[in-house]
Image (cartoon, rainbow, N blue to C red; front, side, top):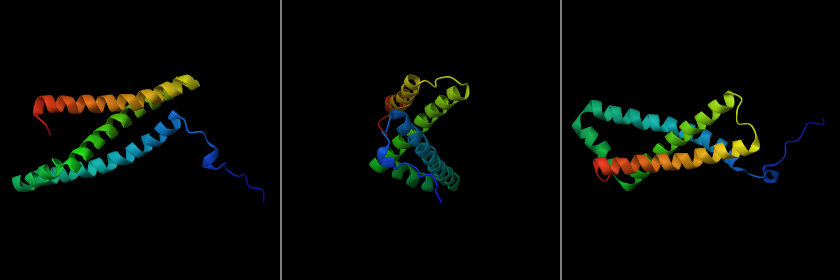
Length: 128
């Protein structure tokens, strides 16, 4: 049996577009868990003020803030990755320079949008 052998990962040269493809999948999974957090939030709201206060206190810790910022980045990064895929669905942007440019733009854009979101939240609503 002479089955083809796949090359080992160590011979691949990781590029930005490969990393952003992996990050797109990971952020998709993270958004699933974010929906679970949203469900718990809605349950806390429906059970009344005491449950909501506990949930609010948990999210106001540094770990809760870290999770919220991470979810925000995952949302923006996944959204920009989706836009990148829509561009590809229209058979545009397949040359190597454009692929790398779009991958870099989705990474940098996700970070910038996350920072802008949280800075505007802090300015208009107070610090966390």
